[in-house]
Image 1 (spheres, protein in one colour):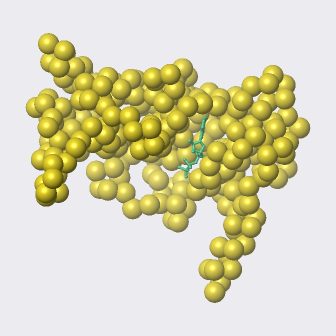
Image 2: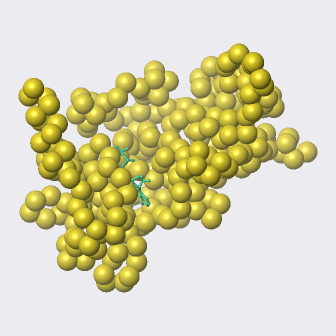
Length: 271
Ligand SMILES: Nc1ncnc2c1ncn2[C@@H]1O[C@H](COP(=O)(O)OP(=O)(O)OP(=O)(O)O)[C@@H](O)[C@H]1O
């Protein structure tokens, strides 16, 4: 009963703000973009310059922890300087908490592109897109962070290019997740993606590639379900690099190693 009452109370206090509300006297809420585990993100119009921005606020039910995690996210975003990673425009602290304002990336997520728009990727297109995405991932790694949430809903597809968003779970290399997140936020991660290490992000990139590769997969009638190795007709280099991403083969310790192999696989495709 207590847990039920607490849930009701939390959803009541986390009830999203309404379109038309003004944040900090400057940001007009246009719509709710989404509710994450500790924050709510709104599409807003900046009254000062008429630009659309994404504004993230902590969930009131998460109290001080929500504010602390959002501050962390802002600190990490501040260190990113890549044209395909949203820029942090400002983080505003006030008596009751804080909010962060970032560049709004219009477009659709890779998840929507594949599952709602029905876009399919050939193996070659998948390699090209992954190489583009890896430039963003490499930037995060070079700045000393592991993103830890590279998934199709966190890639926004705009004008044919992938943008990497959501630094809510990112950690500095070597940092312990238990020191940052509360127990309820710590999902059970596959052993291959538990370490705060480059190969954990690359494991996620492998999954993202599978989503792209399966987008052009057509099962034969009466075909029994099999593994991706059995179902997808992949060229040997792509199959080999996926096995390394999934740590079935020797794992990649550096993003560049993987990118080099991707480039080689692309040359073979084109040759
Ligand atoms: N800079 C941005 N530009 C455009 N859309 C964004 C931006 N940042 C977040 N979004 C969208 O806002 C929604 C909420 O994102 P947010 O990062 O707050 O939480 P989440 O990804 O749903 O959850 P969690 O933080 O728990 O992983 C998502 O649908 C995401 O696509």
